[in-house]
Image (cartoon, rainbow, N blue to C red):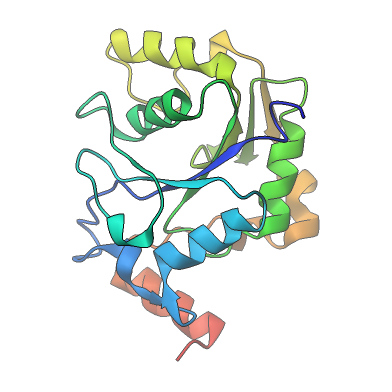
Length: 200
């Protein structure tokens, strides 16, 4: 089995949900929560699913391995390092907990796109979506080096790895990219998404 085919899925749920005003991972969605929804989509791609919970262990009641950041204050890049450390030598497939419109088929395509590359990341226009992306084990040292230099952006290590970017044309078969990667950052975003999906 290739590194990409054996990728470990991680729900990225380490944010503090300041703009939402409450833990967005636990917001109701489709009979469960946003966290449950993200877990289900990653499970549809592969059996090994884990949680990234930020600096504190959370969501232990889900019965999945929970990994905390090994570099406090490093934000999502620190979460990526924690995922790569936990999954080594396998690749990782990240899905942000607040991206409910990403489909399993899209996630599977990112995993497949990793073949021959170190990372596979959607880039729509000038905006990368690094929290819905696949990363190979070769990213670990460049990520660690970037953090050591005080760099915190998810793209800061890209010059040192082989990144495959997937543009809107590559992703259109999965739906409208502007909707697929929509984040639920605040109550208005959440209410609009619930109304769009006609959820109870």
